[in-house]
Amino acid sequence: MTELPADVLEILVCPSCHTKLAWDYEAAELQCTSAECGLAYPVREGIPVLLIDEARHPGGPR
Image 1 (cartoon, rainbow, N blue to C red):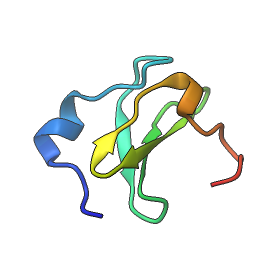
Image 2: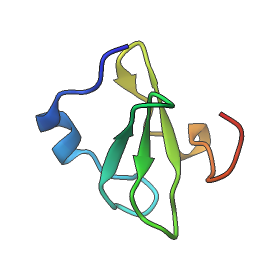
Image 3: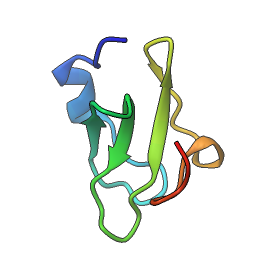
């Protein structure tokens, strides 16, 4: 799986708290950069799934 283009990553924000997202290389997911939120969103077949119900909570299983 390849990472998202930088220009796409620049405009994506967390649907929950509207903070920027960062690419987590190890987990191949998008991680909210807010310390209070920290939700991790899956990327399936190169498409970010930015649904709060699909997000993994901090410290939750991968």
